[in-house]
Image (cartoon, rainbow, N blue to C red; front, side):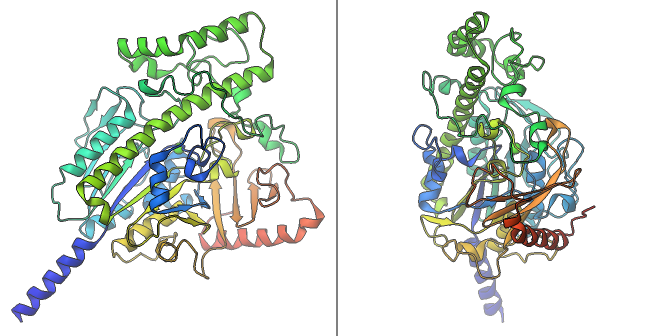
Length: 512
Ligand code: CA
């Protein structure tokens, strides 16, 4: 009997030892258009070779979507595996995450995993379910960031935020308390979130280059709801002189907004600020001189803003990519790579000038999409490109199944493991559409809406006006014309409305 018990115990220990580690590398507002594994117009100019390592060695999901395209809500969906109206974190302005509710880190901790989150958290309440956490307050800062500690104190660390989050993640990996335990580490970047201040080593990246513009930079919002015109996220009218464009002092021209200063400049040391001024000074002065001389038309001003914005955004992405390389190198060197699932994702996509916008929120592809790349040696075949419709509510059940933990019935997402084990092909009973919800918080004045997206079609419902918008993503991938009142699309509209009702009911969403 004793021999049998000891045999069973060692078998259990062996199984436990083989449970995979999970390294969840996450960023903020990183659009697919700015990841070379997804292609796009920056594929050659601003490649992301380290993120692309995951694509070469694992799988890329090409139809990966968020359930609510803003920072806090996306994170709450990930932790709980539930839609916003169910997990209670609905928007960034009024919600506070209820840390008493079940989350996947809690289930993993209970199953013997060591759990940690380092970097951006943005859920107002402090993390629960983690053996270790160290988080940025709110949005955090690029330069010399503060980190909230588990004892409630705050520590400022000199340097650049993406490097520091990686330093801390590497230190945690190297100094784990019990290396026999499997782990989950969530290494969560602030970058490339607004207001885009690059690392000093990247200030001159893309200097003198004219980066490609999106075809829809000057979208006039014809053939779609008037709600599209009523946002506050356009490059032409809503970019702040200092906050967004890193220009000095006050704007001398009404085509640039004044009033929000860039807090990063106040955080920089004297030498950091001098280095920034040295790098950006000449280009800033040329703009100021050109504006004073009346040289720039409205379109030229928008183009200038786009170039300044996209270069700083891609410079911030470069630091994220380099730091992902550092983590992957460590997994290789330490031997952990063999039994560690590595995921790269970001809380939602972003407009990189498409439709004339920056920011997110709308259910259009650029901000609805989330990057999702996964490497899992022995399970995910290298080089898989999956077209399965997946969503951030699927991450929690995936992690639970990977760890051998039973998935609770109230989790709304589905484990991706059947898809992962089948070369990215979804099983026959997989979802046919995803559900999306946006509350319409005051920031950026984007109208409240929800909707569904299938393989081919997207249906929006604008909550206040009751308007419908229907897009055929095959014929109109840039979503320039709604077909909701096109008689030839009446059948598709009826089908998509039925899908919308079904998913609203399935997810227990209250629709007024
Ligand atoms: Ca975000």
